[in-house]
Length: 494
Image (tube, rainbow, N blue to C red; front, side):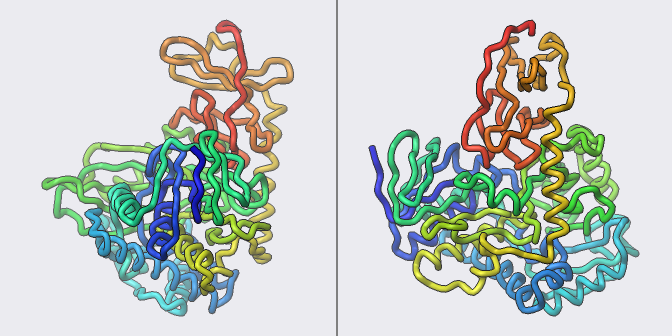
C-alpha cells in the first residue's frame, strides 16, 4: 500500500515525535515511520536532563559565536524547556516533569578561574545563575564551589513519548513502527518496500541516514555509560548535577559526569549517574574496557553519594558531538525539502525540541530566529583545530585494516561473544550464538569502509569512524550506515 502525505517524518524518538506533533497542530498532514519501536533508539537511553546549562561552556561558545549568538543559544534552550513543559500541560502527560536547580562544579583537573568565567558568560547570555560556596546535594561538597542554574527541569522520557504519541494520533497523524525507510529522496522514501511520497521529509534518526559523508565530518560519535541505584525517599532533593569534565582527556569532548534523581516508588528514589565517555568503537584506546567503565563510574558516584544502594540498572548510549557544540537542525545541505535533526551533543532533549521548532517554522514558511545558528550548512572556522583532531582520529581508524585480528580461530570464541578474524586479506566479524552456531560477516562497515570493533557491553559491532552500529546478527542498529553487514559463510572450526 503506497502512502501520500504532506510531511514524512523518519524516526520515532523525541525529535521525530515532537516535530510531528507541532506540524499537526499547525494543520499539516503527517506520517511518521520508525524502524523499531517508539523510543527504541537513543531517546530511550537518555538520562533526560532538561537544561540550559550546556555541556560545553558558555565562555567557549562566546569565543566561537560571539556574545549576541551565545545569548540566542541560551534563549533557545530555555525556550525548549518551556516548550516541553507546555506540551506536558496541554496533553496532560503524566511524566514526572518538574523544575529543579542544576549545579555545575569543577572537575579535579579544571581551574577555579574557569567557574568564574562561566558565571560571567552565563550572566551575559541572560541565564539565572549564581555562585555557591558549596554544592548543596553532595557529601564532601562543603568547601567546593559550584555554579547554580535556576529553572532547569527533568522528566520521564518514555512517559513523555507515550503522551506525544497519543497527541499525534488524536490530531489525525499516522505512525508506523517496524517500518524501515530507505532510498530517501526529495519525493519521499521506500518504507518496507512501499512508496511513501511527501512534499517535505524530516530525517530524525539521531545520525542522518540520507547522507553519506557531509554531516559525518562535522560530528563524531561517543559512547556514554549510565548506572542507577536506589536511595531512600527524602534523602536528597531533586536536582541536576554536572562536573566540568576531564581537561586532560585525550578526547576532544573532555568527558564529564552527570547526575540526577528520579522518582522510583513510595520508598525510594533512583539516583542516575553517567559519564566515562569514549569515542565509539575505541574503548581500548585508553586501555579501559566497557566493564571497567561502569566500575569507575560507580566509584566516582559513591564518592559523592555514599548513600546509594546496590546498582539496579546500567546501560550505555551513543552521543553525537558536533565540533562546534551546537546541534544541526534544519534543511539538509543541498536540499530544499529534506530536513535533519542531529548533533544532539549532551543536551539531546532540548536540542531536538529546538530542531522541531525550527523545522515546523520552516515548513510553515516562518523565519525562525535560531535557524541560521543551528543550520546544518554552517561552517564554524574557529573550531578548525578540533575538527582536524577529530578527522585525524577518524582517519587513523583505517589502520585497523593492517592490524592483526583478535582471534586466531573461531574455536577460541565463547558463547555469547563476538570478535574479529583475519582470513587472507579479509577481515571477518564473528559472533557465537547461544546454540553454538556462528554468525559471520564482513567486518567492513558498509558506510565508508572502516573496520568495525566488538562492543562486549552492548553485544554489537561498532564502527570507530562514524559511529554505525550493528547487532550480533549483522543488522544495522545505528546509522549512518544504511545497510547490514555483509554475511559470510564460514566453517565452525575456521
